[in-house]
Structures are given as structure tokens and as C-alpha cells.
Amino acid sequence: MCIVVTIVCIVATIVCIVVTIVCIVVTIVCIVATIVCIVVIIVCIIVTIVCIVVTIVCIVVTIVCIVVIIVCIVVTIVCIVVTIMCIAVTIMKESSFAFDALNFLSLSQFWDKSNIQLVLY
Image (tube, rainbow, N blue to C red):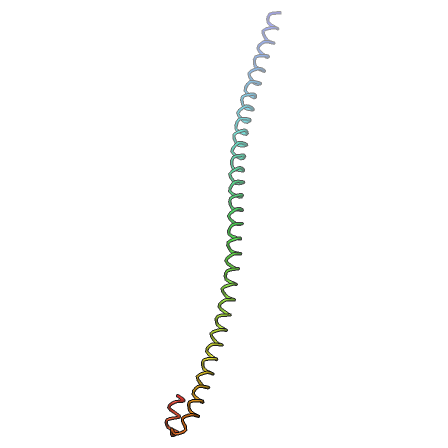
């Protein structure tokens, strides 16, 4: 009877040792999986923060670009208006100069043609 009990105890001990080894391996795998999950969570948090920062920077850059475009449009309109005004003033000056020259020439009847040509230049 003692021999049967001893054999059962030896088999039970071997089974317990195997189960213990399996449990240790499973525990190590679970610890590694937990560490991997924590690292993945940390990486996801970092990636999320980076994405939020990039999104905010993109929004700010877009707003700045819109403001720059508006300023450029305004500057272009002002430049066009100033150019038109400069052309108008130049035309008015030339017309006024020609008109004044003709009036001067009509009053200066005593000048000869060579003098009139000099005035016109």
C-alpha cells in the first residue's frame, strides 16, 4: 500500500513540477505582453500628442497664410490704384505742359520757327 501511495505522490510531484514550469512560462509571457502593451500605450499617447500639436501648427499656419493672402490682395489693389493714379497724373502733366506750351507759343508770335522747335523739345 505504501508503494502505491509513493508512486502516486511521485507522479503528483512530477505533474506539479510540470504545471509550475508551465505557470512560470505563462507568467513570463504575460509580463512581456503587459510591458509590450504599456509601451504601445505610451507610443500611442506620444503619437496622439504629436498629431494634436501638428494639427494645431497646421491650423495656425493656415490662418497666417490666409492673412498673408488677404494682405497681398490689398497690396496688389493699392499698387494698381497707385499705378493708375501715376499714369493719370503723368497724362495730366503732359497734357498741361503741351497746353501751356501751345499757349506760350501763340502768345510769342515774334519768335521764328527755329525757336519754336526748341521750345517744343
